[in-house]
Length: 214
Image (tube, rainbow, N blue to C red; front, side, top):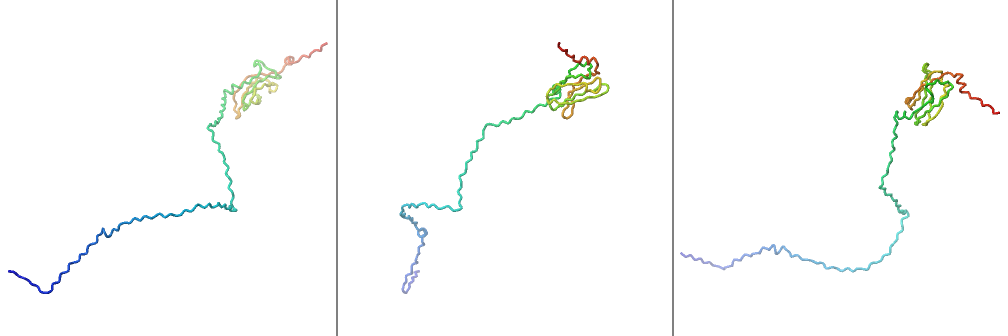
């Protein structure tokens, strides 16, 4: 079966839709960069002007500063300084001191001497710090005669006067050194006898009277 449709009336054409193109992001949003190169501007250069130097007066409170004096410092010498150390003086021992102490009385210990006799004595020590002591003790009675002296570091010759002894008898005599602290060192001893003076002793000591020459 065939069906035919027929329409009646004025026919109006259906309008076509308008298509708006989508803007291109690349073409519309990017503006091409423009390089701007500034043109150099010529500035006229003027000739330098010589301005005269103006000397300004110093303030009234200004004090001129003097030039410092240069002090020359001596360069130390490389030669070392030698300091002399004093040499210690050796102290003599007692044995060495006694070796130098040799007192003596010039007499014969086998003879009894009259009291008027004067004997020669030699004594001394080269150290002035020591005192020389001479002591005589009678053997029976214990009578004592003591004498002390200093020779100031020298050796001296003196006299021993027997009349100064207290009594007739036999004496033990001793020379010794006395140290500054009172110590008794270096004793030298002997024995000497005294007797009364006789007429014979006086005759021997009498000087003959010189005869007159005619």
